[in-house]
Image (cartoon, rainbow, N blue to C red; front, side, top):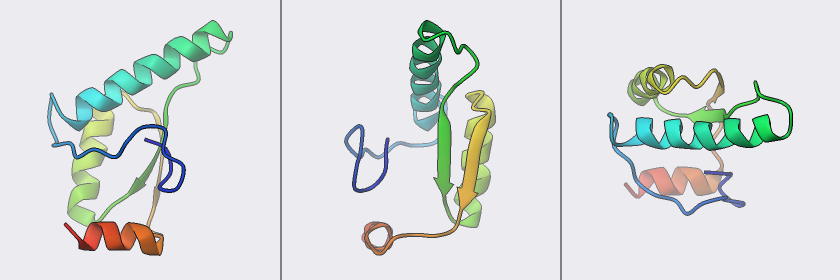
Amino acid sequence: MGLYFTPITRLKELNYGKYGICQELFNRNKTIMEYSTALGKPKIGLIIIIKSNYKNLIDILDEMTIAKIETYTIVNDFTPEESKLLASR
């Protein structure tokens, strides 16, 4: 979570499905919603930046719907560091 050079949490590999990325998205969104509600702004939730290839894009969009993430953007620009990280997998 966070950006490549300024992560909020450590990078971790998650699988798709109920106990993988969906659970992580749900938990993070819940935390953000509780925080924003405490600030008096109850409708401000998690904002996701999706960087993905086509097949993974469909999968992650499904996970976003299941986890009830309403705000996201899809970009196709990868930094050189992100490209190296993806190539190493």
